[in-house]
Amino acid sequence: MMDNGILRVVARFIIPYILLVGLYVQFHGEYMPGGGFQAGIVFAAGWILFVLIYGLDRGLEVIPLEVMYRLCAGGALLYAFTGLVGVLLGGKYLEFAPFFESRHAAHQTGIIIVEFGVGLTVATVAMLLFTLFTRRRAEWDEALEQNEDTET
Amino acid sequence: MIENLIDVALLVFLVILAITIVRIRDLFAAGMMFAIYSLLSSALFAVLDAGDVALTEAAVGAGISTLLVLACLALVRRYEHPTGGHNLIALIVVLITGALLVYATLDLPEFGAADNPAQVHVGPFYIENTYPDMGIPNMVAAVLASYRSIDTMGEVFVVFAAALAVYALLSVRPHKNMPGVRRRPVKRLKSPRQAEADPPVAGKEQAP
Image (cartoon, rainbow over all chains, first blue to last red; front, side):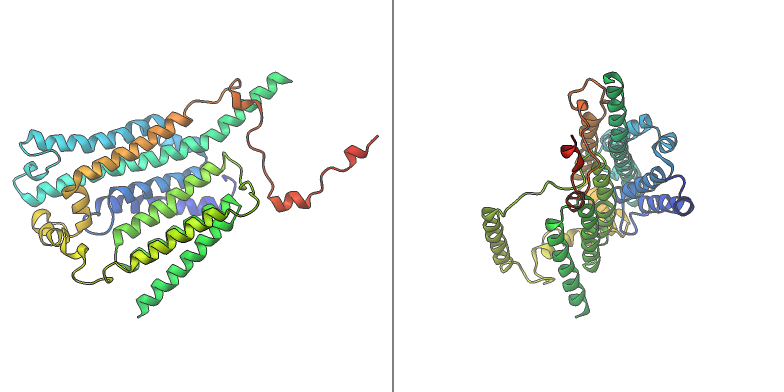
C-alpha cells in the first residue's frame, strides 16, 4: 500500500499519536481505565498500521523478530522477578510493601513495574502473531514457486 | 430511562449482528461483523461504567482480534463451504439451552440492588482499602496488579504461551518437498454467486 498517498499521509500523521496513547494508557493506568494489557495492544496496533502501510520488511527493521522474541519472554520474566524482589526484601512473593518505607510509594512502584512487564509481553506477542501470520503467505508462495520451477 | 433505551438499542443491535454472523458465508464480512459486535459490547460496558472492561474490549476484541482474523484469512479460503439442509437436532438443543438460560435469569438478583453478592462480598474491602493501601484511585488496576497479582502473572504467561504455540506452528519455513506444497493450497476464490454467474468453459468439450 506504499503507493496510496492518502493512506501514507494519514498513517504518518496518526501512528505517533497511537503510540503515544499506548504509552499514556500504560503509565497512567493507575489514574484512569487502562493498564498493561490495553496499552500493549494499542502500541502493537500502531506498529501493525505501520506494517500495513510500509510493508513487513520496513516494520521488522524497526523491531526485529529477535528483539520481539526476547521482549515477549522478558516482560513475563520481569513480572516474575519483581515478585522475587519482594521475597528477597523479606516479604511474600509479589508483595510490594517491602520495596520502600512509604507504603504508597512501594505499592505504586511495584504496580508500575509489573504493569510494564505485562505491556511489554502483550505488545510483542501481538506483533509476533501478526508477523508470523502475514509472513506465512509469502513463504508459502515462495515454496510453491520453487516447486513449479523444478517440475517444469 | 434514557439509559434503558440505550441498553435496549445496543442489545437489539447485538442480536441482529449475531444472526447476521450466523447467516453470512463470506468470512471477511463475518470478521468485520465480529469487530462491530465487540465495539457494541464495548459501548454496553461503557454504559455500565466499566471503563477498564470497555477499553479492553475495544482494544482486544474490536482491534487486535479482527486484525489476526484478517491475517488468518490471507492463508485460507474466503468463503465458507456451503452446507445443505438444516440441522434439526442442533436447533432443538439450542432452543432448550436458551430457554433454560432465560429461566435462570429469573433467579438473578435485581440489577443494581444494594444487597447483590457483588456489592457485599469482597467489593467493599477493595473500595475501603485501595486508597489507604496504595494511594491510587483506579481500583481495577490495584486489584489486578497488587491484590490479585499472581492471577495476572498467570495471564501474562498464558499470553506468552499463545505466542509459543503460534511460533511452534508457523515458524518452520515451508520448503518445496513438504507434503502440502505439492498442490496450490488456496485458490483465489470467487464468491459462490460469481461462480454461478460465470458459465463453465463451454467451448472445450464441443471442440473437435
